[in-house]
Amino acid sequence: MNNISIKEFIFPRLERIGVKLSELQYQQLDLLAAAMLADPMYKSVSKIFDPQEMATKHFLDSLVPLCFSLPEWKAKNIVDLGTGGGFPSLPLAVALPESHIVAIDSRQKSVEFVARMASAAGLGNVVTVHSRIEDAGRDGKFREKADLVVCRALSSVRTLVEYTMPLIKTGGSALYYKGPKLDEELAESANAFNIFSIVADNVEILRLAPPEIPFERSFLIVRKTCAVSERYPRKCGLPLEKPL
Image 1 (cartoon, rainbow, N blue to C red):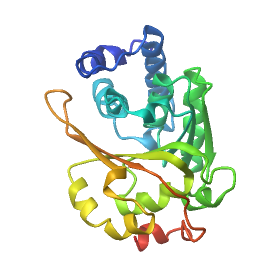
Image 2: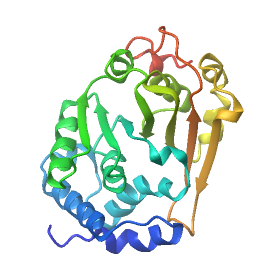
Image 3: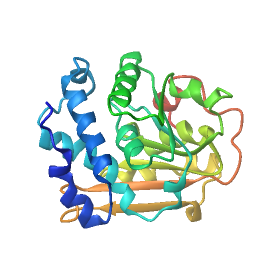
């Protein structure tokens, strides 16, 4: 386990797209990977055990949006909704040591796993929260407090809008890691965008594909310009079951 080198697999890719990490940061990524594979709970949060595949599909995928020169990467308070096994929260915590990252998940085991991994890698800028997303959006400790909310492999855009907008302060942003169906999801999101006063000028689409990275990845950035009605988020389950 101690011989895992995440750097070996992802350094050339990150260098190609202009993402620079220090040797210490690569060492932290190696610590994370080793701790994950050694933890008996890892199999409950991921089916990827091959180190190279893990480096590419988890670590590289979490870090690639850093190649874009976005004001969002200066965010001090970042929330990772539905963090699962800690992606993208843990790699982002390594790459953005000045940011405070809150990893939220509805599964207690996932939250405990991410907390152990953060400790193993010496990441003091990560805290974990066990909560349903809708509950977090109504909680005064989190509502309209985040500078940036990130979501990876969580839900469709119209559901993510309802999940994330209540958590973001006015002037903050959401960043969704999306796949090839982004355009289709956007076409379904007109009503949700209207409800949250999201207009085209506040939305940005970014894409990466081979040869820059070994897979296709789209990112949707939604920038919040006004407060959210107390009606949202709706009660637990509704944003997913009956999306806006």
